Amino acid sequence: MGRAPLPPGSPLPPNPSVPPLPGAAARGLNPQQPKKETAEQRTLVVGRGISVQGTVQDAERLVVEGTVESSMISAKELAVMPGGLFRGSVEVENAEIAGTVDGSLTARGSLTLRATGRLLGKAACRRLKVEDGGQITGQLEMLGDDASAPKPPAAAPAADKPVTTEG
Image (cartoon, rainbow, N blue to C red; front, side, top):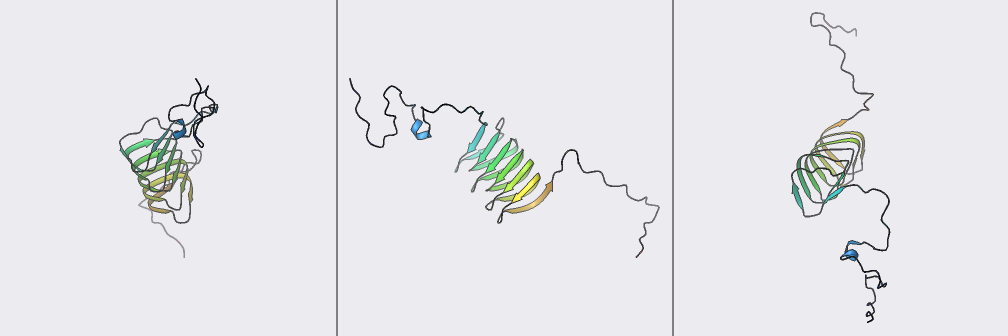
């Protein structure tokens, strides 16, 4: 028995020997394409209008489009999209902020604050890029290389010896 022709513009493949994956067209998947050889990062996306509270474990990349509240998150990358809100503490390699971070952020690599980004609270990073319009309110610390860690301050003069300057 023959198969009825597909209507024009149908997302289904015309080859009747390869059945489509259920929902593949909706997800943008093409069953004809081979899998990518590169390993993909474990990514958690908190979508717009979604609020998450708690601990996130084993995510290499955290993308915040909605709201995330957490006492501490460790990940490789953090991306807060426009309209996104991260509240709490996070430690990452690299961060890109186009939304709002309210709390404590440590980026051992680079921190990029986009024009729509707002950083409230404490932040520490090795490299910083702030686009025109990006806002930082709070405390910012620049991290040094491990080899060039800050040296302790020189010993203060003894209290029994007065310090004099000539002027």
